[in-house]
Length: 328
Length: 261
Ligand SMILES: Nc1ncnc2c1ncn2[C@@H]1O[C@H](COP(=O)(O)OP(=O)(O)OP(=O)(O)O)[C@@H](O)[C@H]1O
Ligand SMILES: [Mg+2]
Image (cartoon, rainbow over all chains, first blue to last red; front, side):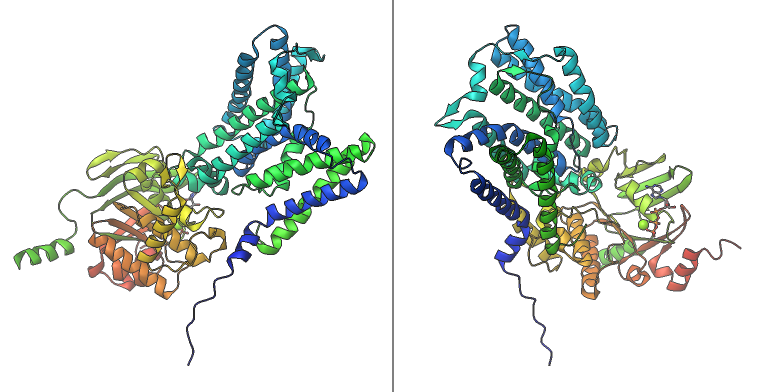
């Protein structure tokens, strides 16, 4: 007689490993990078260097958190580097002209969010691909910054503002703390709120989201508001750290940010985003940059090495993932 | 005794008295040069199941998507319980109690089973998702429909085609719909699951839901439907009470024989 038996449920541990393969592999990769650079130069692990690394990683991390939302909807924002340059320059001009720094800070974040709204409108409501809209933004927005500054760097007069980039709290750099706060908020919003669920739904299947009554277009627009606002916040941090504003700030930063997000395991196809992965990805990008400098590798080679490492890491990451799913 | 007879007579007589649950007139819809619908009229009463059959590309899905607010008709009117409605999108139709299982299912692959069942109706505590409550609710929904999915926290992408279809059906049936539209809901289901869906339709009918069932499995229509409408090239060409027709006639109506003579 044949028995009808139920299939065994797989072990929870195995399910967990499968579901978090991306995050685990990027964590391992980060540890491996740290070990490698320590071997090359043991200054790498010194507290001074690590704190410096965190300070420098903060702007990338802040923007990457917002970019995780953008990429989870299946979009992309190439304009963040240029938004940073513009905000950086305008903030420096206003501070130089004697505006109060709290007012300037608020205004700058509003400016970033407005630029994001403008781009988001074309993406969500006019259905122009995000790649095109933000590529145009990448070019035009830095252009505005160049016009405003004439290409010169603008010195920011000393004030409390500079502590935003240079200060520490309990020995930890303020930018790093700011980045941590942004990441925690991003994590909670993405995984635990109705809004985060809507972002995932729109990214996974926009039409399905619309059919169940979600305001798909508004959600799509909103993520570009966050990326614009986050870029502005990062710009303030950078301006405060360097004590100056320049239209040449953050050139190529969008690539670091996108690499961090994708390294972390957020799917470029949309629908699946992981904030923890993004944090690890942003740290990895910064560790690579910092480690290569400490290893005295010629700055010209740094870009080549960074690009290659990113490609290899993402390739390995996808291989590991494919073993589990094999779809797409 | 008399009441019983009246009840039976009412169930059998078509058209019925009273306002229809949903009543549409002169629905037209074109996609570019393709006239998908060329003027469709239909009435549907509460507690009734209407089958819609027709060739591929006859316009069945387009018609029902208009009822569900997914498409806006070029022309025509829709009345719900005698009240004219003009949807600007599916959200409004859903708020009016019109639910639909789409042919393509409309699930989000990267979201878990519970999340898909509550998609657009997330249980919340303030701005936060109440995931535990949704998982409990999801288990209850699936149990009621006799769907076996061991792990409601599994991503929908990991499920079989039939399981996915069951989720789409459970989602549409579980929130007290007034009109339930099923666009080929059983195409991927096994024997027992089809039976469960048919039983579900009977149960919803008894609760006074108006059901529209699109299917190519004609034998199912005879088991649950009270009436059947046949569509052909964007028009409704025939309507029959189920107990006054048979399989051969319906097949003939679908392929269009008799219309060409
Ligand atoms: N979004 C669309 N854009 C363009 N044409 C469409 C669209 N939706 C439907 N059509 C056209 O409308 C006609 C009717 O399609 P519909 O999907 O309603 O058919 P159907 O009766 O549901 O067929 P099936 O049995 O294959 O599901 C077809 O000719 C189809 O090509
Ligand atoms: Mg169809």
